[in-house]
Image (cartoon, rainbow, N blue to C red; front, top):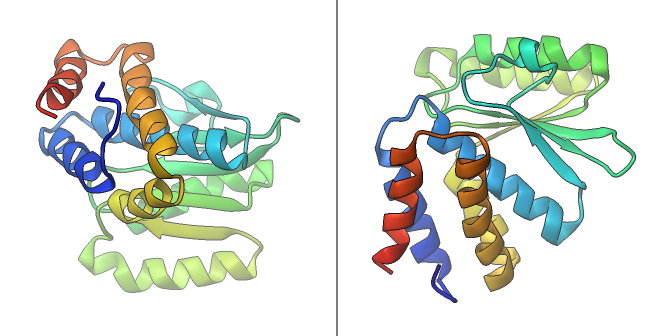
Length: 187
């Protein structure tokens, strides 16, 4: 890892990393690392729980791909990660799973909302708010730009390290781990 890397270079490397399709594995590693870094640097939660990319939320007992958990073992927020456009079905499914556990804050990171679902999703976000749940829809890079700028060099270093840890810990295919490594060899 280079000792320093700019915000723009970090984001460009992440974009290049996501260009190859991975069945969501790469997107989940990036999002998991970003939320790990948020927890570490901003102290909003203690840990981020996740499972393998091909494990269903039901099988793992998780509400979403990522669960951000406090030191008191309370789920502070959840994150559903998509490397494709978000659908109304995605939103509804996560809402149904989060209600019984009284999870109020739900983040969706996706490159956009499916065109035919935009109005329905916007309405669903409004209804969920009225019912006590906050839904946040973000493009990963919009969220990452703000977070990695606010946290400065320290959070960018943590983010880069955590991506590697996610790729290693969750038995990602070796080609994904190698791709991340090779990106930094160019810097």
